[in-house]
Image (cartoon, rainbow over all chains, first blue to last red; front, top):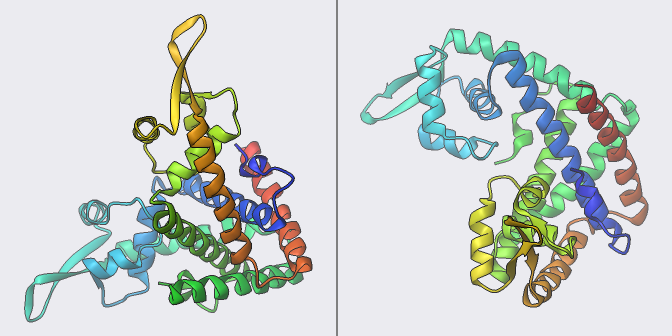
Length: 157
Length: 157
């Protein structure tokens, strides 16, 4: 089902652009989800959680991890339990605070994540392959204007 | 939390572009969600469901409605029940098939949706207001190339 099919011709260009942006994002995301499943038997929330940990060599507390997750809908506690049972992640206690534990990638988890991240990068490069280098730069710049504006509107709210 | 903060500088331009695309989409969507809530006390899945019905004057069966929803995570049956109880939507039986019912917007629902849709359009126009007309056209065209390519990859899979 194509979002853009919803736009009546009388709608402003901005609405057509928004639906195209949403369609593009959803198409690329669906592609990444299905490839993660086929290739690695994993899900986008699991990949996202491991990506957050990969960037935090000293580990993250559960609340930090939850707040950094970019994919909604995943159950952070449930995913963590799974990854621990698979030996990809471990829990360490924080000195001086027995109740707070930190979650870290294990060496095995780090190897597994790097392999997935390389593939993920290839998929993304493939998704944008119809664009020339110059078009990539233009798209990045124009989306930057939209992003800065939306960020400013949110901060002001 | 900014997705783009996750990108290491050694990553290819395409990955930076993808995270910017995702960030933009999420920022605009968050803005729409919070304004729908503040202004109309409603949610994006409810708005989405009403938008699908608005485009189907003869109504939709539940399975058609579910497959057309663009926002994931909403409970279509639950939302429909709510909207029926608020008089915004009704159920009619299909001639010759007593089990299948169609869902339609009521006149009240149609008025309410139109009011929300006009506001929604304004928010979207606002979100893209930092772009010139020419930049909107460029962005639309470049995203079109990405969309066509992603659509072709999906069809071939």
